Structure formats: C-alpha cells, structure tokens
Length: 194
Image 1 (cartoon, rainbow, N blue to C red):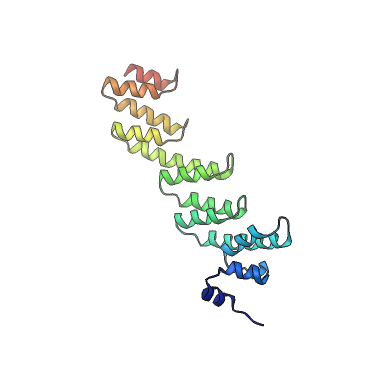
Image 2 (tube, rainbow, N blue to C red):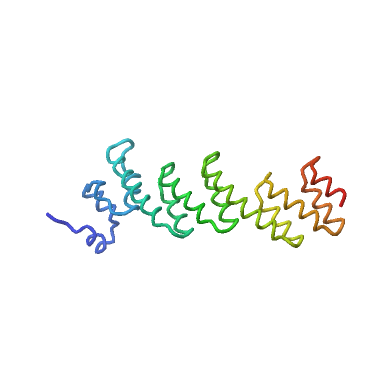
C-alpha cells in the first residue's frame, strides 16, 4: 500500500512528523530540518533512531549554514543547529563574518563559547567596530557612547576614555570621566588634571 503522507497531513491537519511516527516511518525518510530535530527529540536516548535523526539534523543544518548569506539567515542557522555541533560552530563563524555593526559583533561574541576560537574572532570584530566608533566620536555624548559600548578592559575603551577626558569642558564632565577611569591609571591622572 502506497500512502501519500504529505497529502494526508494537508487534508487532516495532522503534522507530518506525527503521521510518520504513527506509521513508524524511519528517520532516513526525514525531509526537513524540523522533522529531523523532532525525530531526535522523540527517539529513545542512545538508540539507532536517535543517531539516524542526529545525522539528518546535522545534514540539514550544514545545508542551512552553507546557504546563509545574510546575518538573519546565519542567526537562524545557528539557532536551529544541534548544540555543540560543528554545524553550529560553522554558523557562528558565518554570523561573525556577516556582522556589520558593533552591536552585531557584540551579539556574536555573547553567543560564542567561552575561551573558544569563535569568541576570539568575535572579540576582534567587536574591537574593530569599537575602534571606528572611538575614532569618529567628536562630541562628549559620542565619546561616552563609545566608552560604554567598547569591550571592558580593551584598548578601545581606554581610547574612548581618553577622548572623553579631552572633550570634557566643565568640571562635572571632567569628574564624570574621572569616575570612569581605573584607579591609579594614566587616564585617572589625566582626568584629575583636566
């Protein structure tokens, strides 16, 4: 007997994955990333079914990462890839490469596993955007924003603080810059002189 399960799903409103489960259709016949993830979640732990579903999930994830050409697509590929997989790592690398703003680079940094190569790459990108923002800052408000958005402890944050000090024109502004400076630092001394 040949059953058109896609037609059955459309006609009955029953999800394709439920029909496949009911008819005991194997994981090899999984047709989408969503089906693969659902089959993985349903499969008994450490079973052949779970292993087969993971293989399909990773295959679909790899395709999704490969096709991603926008930041949004890379984010979706990252979110949908199996945790800890090479496909998730590849999606994160693509996400970093597609980051075109400081916020996007910082968000990629926040997604990266601690002390990973991806975290280092995201930090480099974040610092590049931060350096540009510090360079462009020409008002006290812009310098404050550059300071606040720069990675903590970075040379870019230090440069933003120096710019903030140089743009301070009132006692209150100089005091605010002084309060941001690390204790006993050159920046603190410069703010004190200002």
